[in-house]
Structures are given as C-alpha cells and as structure tokens.
Image 1: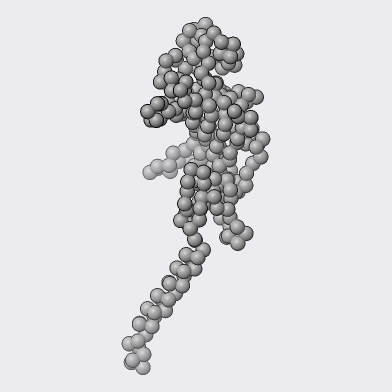
Image 2: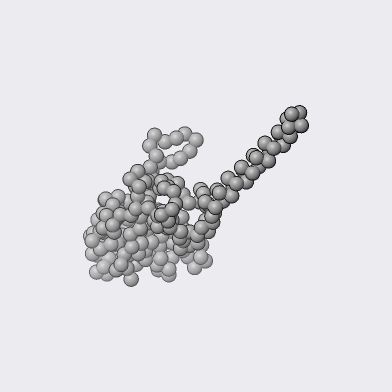
Length: 238
C-alpha cells in the first residue's frame, strides 16, 4: 500500500501528460495551416463572422488571397445591386475622402479631397487647385486609391456604440482642363460651393474618377450573418 501511495503521483503525471498530448494532437488536427483562399467545408464547426480564421489557423496570405477575401469567401453576400445601393446611400452628397496617389519616385502621397458621386455614370468628381502635387502625379499615373469612413474609435475608454463603415475605392483619374466640354459638363454636375463658376474655371482643374472596384466594410452586416466586407466591381470599367 505504501509503495502504491509513493507511485500514485508518478502515475497521475503520466495520465496528465498523455491527456494533454492527446488533446494537443486533436487541436492541431482541427487547426491545420490554411491558405488565404480557404473556404469553410461542411464538416467545419459553425463560426460567427466576427471570428477570423487567423484566430485558430496559421494562414498564409498574399495580395490576392487576403483577409478581406476570407470573409467574402465564407459568409453571406448581398447582390451587386444591393451593394451599389448601399454605396449610393452612404455617399448621398459631397463627402471627404483620403486619397493616395503615387509619384515618379514610387512614394505615395496621401491627401484629403471632397468628392461627389455621380451614380448613373459610376464616377466621382472633384475640383482641385491647378498645379497641386496630386494632380501632377495623376497626369503621369492615373491609378488612385481612396477611402471614406465613419465609425467609433477603440481605445482605453470603450465607445458608447461600436461600429465601422467605409468604402475603399480603386479607380483611374482623368484630369479635366478648363475650356473643354467635359470640364464644363462636370463642373455643372459638381456644383462648386465656395467659388463662382467663372472663378472655378480660372482656378481649378477637375478630377473625374472612373470606378474599377469598391470594397465596402459595414460592421452591422455581421449581426445578420453577412460578411462585413462586400465588393462591388464595375463590369464596364476600361
């Protein structure tokens, strides 16, 4: 009996080690490494949209198979028409965007611009002072990335309401010069607020952004099991 009591702690350690090893093996089997384009299979346990794959798996991402695409591949999506209508409602008037352009040195420049969405044409319009850095850059490299967002900020003090909504736009810019018919037509649609039409013709160039793609983020989508990310792509983009 005394020998058994002396051996008991050793036996318990062996049981615990075996149990932990077995459990770890099972967990490892359930959380195998995956790629960024992975899709939930029918045997996967249900996962709410607010839980990311990277919380359980070692995920290999690249520029195409990224975290955004993982949400889009694995949760409910709205129709293209529904996404576009949400974008139109989110941008009802002139809205301020953070805009990134790239110069000849391949260094990005970020600035803020007030854009107006023209829904029927799938373009954004804005006016810019002649000779600004971003306009000169866009004359040489027309690709532009821009984002408009609203939401709460997470910090030491929790916000009263947690939410985040944004549109991330990828498109091509065309610089419109005063004196051209396209400039005149676009200026009328833009409706300058602080300058007269005549002053605008003397002072500004216009940017016309043709939309290639818009990535929408809406945290409210997750309440109904939808992906927070939704993508709208312009089939007529050239």
